Amino acid sequence: MIVWAAFERHRETYELNHLHPRRTEFIQPAKSGMPERRYTVRLVFSLHCFTRSPAPGETVDPTWLYSDSRETRVFCPRRWALSKLLPPIMENLVARPCYHTGKGNFLVVEIVTEDGVAQQYEIYFTASRAKERGLVNLYVQSAYVRDKALQNSPKRKPIRLQVILFNVLANKTIKAPS
Image (cartoon, rainbow, N blue to C red; front, side, top):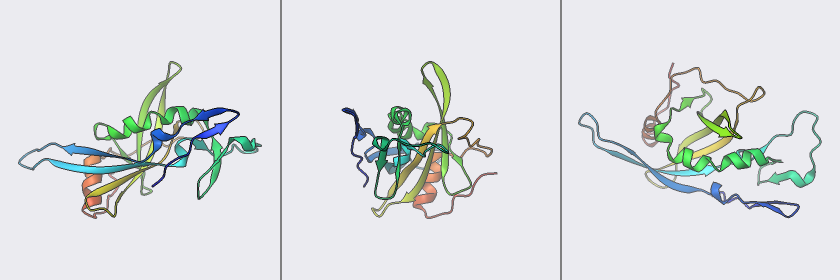
């Protein structure tokens, strides 16, 4: 599993242990004669949660680069600061609407306040069966504040997390709601 090393630049350290993999449990209450369901989930966070691509034409100071085994990107202090919100958002995902992007992943839009301004924080994730029986992986692919260059307005109906988890464990295709 992915365990992120802290990012260090000019004697300043940005800890990333809040993005280490973790397990959580989601409970679907009993309803209409159906029993309660419990889903065990492993949350995994990608490099894109605290890094960004270089802007077109940007010359990047190499001291700002962060790499994993697949790619090198620009460490982003703003994304890093917002990434501290990711674990509690993802651990409470059952209370939020999710949207199927139509591209095999899902989107959650969370409103956050940064410096007194409400902004939309987009979180993209995939769901897959883990090798361990009964375990679902939720892999957070990317998370960033929506702006003119980065936006994906959900145009579909929301899908509940419980539907995603049930279908993943049952090995059923999750169709984008229309």
